[in-house]
Each structure stands twice: as C-alpha cells, then as structure tokens.
Image 1 (tube, rainbow, N blue to C red):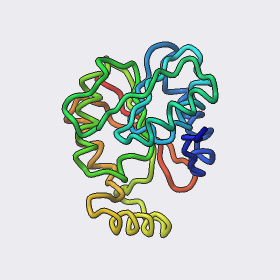
Image 2 (image 1 turned 45 degrees about the horizontal axis):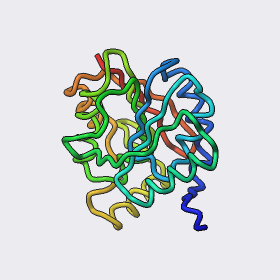
Image 3 (image 1 turned 30 degrees about the vertical axis):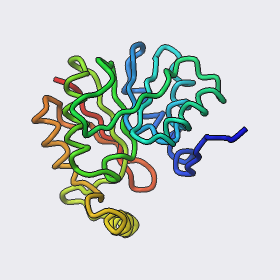
Length: 200
C-alpha cells in the first residue's frame, strides 16, 4: 500500500517552538482552522497537545489533502477532522466559523492575493478576541534582513515572481483594515516570526 504521507524536515524542527507560542494563544476549547496545512505534520502534532480543541486542516492541493488524511490515520488523532480543500484567495471557504485560525509558512509561498483572502476570510469566520496565528519569515522596517532570508527570498522569486518575503508592516496594515488588532510578535528560530492578530 502506498504511503501518502509527505514529510518536511522544517516541520520537525519548528513544531515545538510553534507549540510553545500556541500554548499562550489558542483557546481551551473550540474549532481551530488551519490554512495551508501542507503535509499535515503540524496539525497532528498540535492536536496531541490540545485535546480540548478540534482541528480542521485544509489545503488547495490534492497531494497535501491525501497526506493530511494519512498522517491523521497514522497517528490516530481523534480531534482532527477530515481535511477540506480550501484556497485562501477564494471568496468562498468551506468552513462557516472558527475559534482560531493557523497559517504556517504560506504567505511567502503564495501570491499576495492569498494573503488578502486569508485576512478577509479570517475576519468573516472569527469572533471578537479570537486569534489568527501566522508563522514564517518576514521583512521588518528597521530590521536588517539576514543573508539567509535574502537568499531565500531570491530563490522564491526565481520559482514564482509573485512569491517572496512580505513586509510585516504591509500585512499588519491589511489586517487592521479587516478588523484585526496590531500584531503580537515573537521571534522564532531560523529567523522566523510568530505573528498573532486578534479580531477586534
């Protein structure tokens, strides 16, 4: 039988650092929607740590959806729902509401319209005070971008001119226009950031 589980080394490296931030971010109960779940390795890891929460993974790619389902079955994560196909840039999401939203390593590997759709969709789903958690590398005003992130940005743009590191200030301004708070920022390993917006 074919093993459909995808594996990304970066996930194993960053999942516990992300989990530490999520412990102070996620509610005790409710539904957590993950946008661009990728392999599904993150969602099953978080589900084990938050037994009071139900996790809804999603992704626009068939291979990712199969991988998420395979990881969920392999780990026996009972609080992970079957993955749904969701394109963040779409105006129609197959989820009606959520108590928190996670989006890890998507914004820089997607066109800007995906970020616009993410914030628009999150604003429509989340109740007041609920968190939108973003993780990844960003450019910040007044902060020198590391050589490794500059090289990463260049490689992304070579693969797709619409990809690349985003200015955190631009993301925050867009979030504010959709009804979110200023971001709470936590520096993470490997020059990444955890960025938490809350619905106001």
